[in-house]
Image 1 (cartoon, helix red, strand yellow):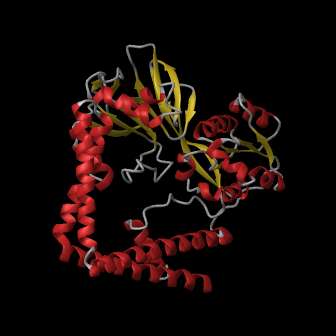
Image 2: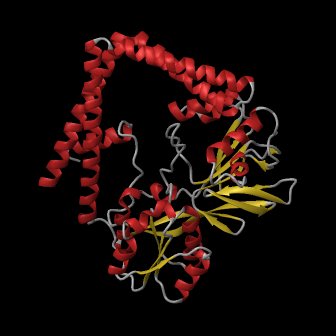
Image 3: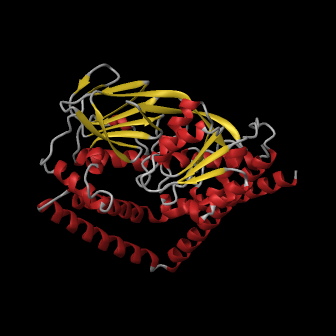
Length: 445
């Protein structure tokens, strides 16, 4: 009861802070509406200048640089004009303090909530204790995150056999050997490609899978609710609960996140990509926007059965991706819908970029732009005039014989997660979902 009251009090406090922020924001707009509109317009101009500079050469590059410079100077002048008023400066300081307090309190409440869920777990069906757990660990992934957290020592202390990979190791073969030697659960800490290789064996051998967020970006681990900053917590999956999730197959390769054909595949196909990601991306974008390169020979049928022979980008997600914002292109709310999400971009120009920016920042309808198609399905066949197609699969460069066949594998993976169950991926502190949860907690539900 005391813990519930503590959570309830914290939620009420967070909501009060949020209401104060809304009041200050409304007051700011009432008294500074013209300033807010001018500032927002100037920021959009700077962003557009960045796009011009990033994708352009010659006059386009020069125009982008000038646009950025003028925009930044304008923003600086606008902000100086705003804060020279002592009242405005004080309001800004209060807003920053309130936002910091709100975010800090929200993080404390979140951790307290999930800690209590793990301890109670009354409604969770606990798994049978594993007799021979096995963990494959890439020591270099995520800048050595797992090694720094001493995951190998902590795992062995729990009775888990640990294998630390070396350069040249075949992850799939290591997983098969572990299964052959009696492993009754396979654990993996590494990038999404490593996780996919272990998952393939887990599916074939009908073994449960434990994932630790030890990769660089940890897309899959984050989508199942694991926090890379708390990698040690993920070891609780070896004593956790089952969750059935989907996987997908591209020809004979299992993947967990997404597969891309077209511009992204072109980018990762460059030898210099690993060491110069930004420069390589810019080079490919410039070739496309300056007509030095046409659309890619990627042939597919949309959900109406219409054949398309060209595309800038073809993106296939294992379950639907939800757009978050411009800095984080997407995440998945559910991993068990039994559907692929197919998104096709057939044209890349300034209008399309402006439209996509609206999608990322304001969650506008993606289908509003005629250059973008999106639908869900169980499978997709991709062909080309070439015998092979390069693809970016879970962030890795792959090459496949055509036709390339992709299909969903509904609930193919038995995933073990910590005893509180699968945490949803953390959302913006100001999202309606978070506010709704705070309101329910404040009401004692």
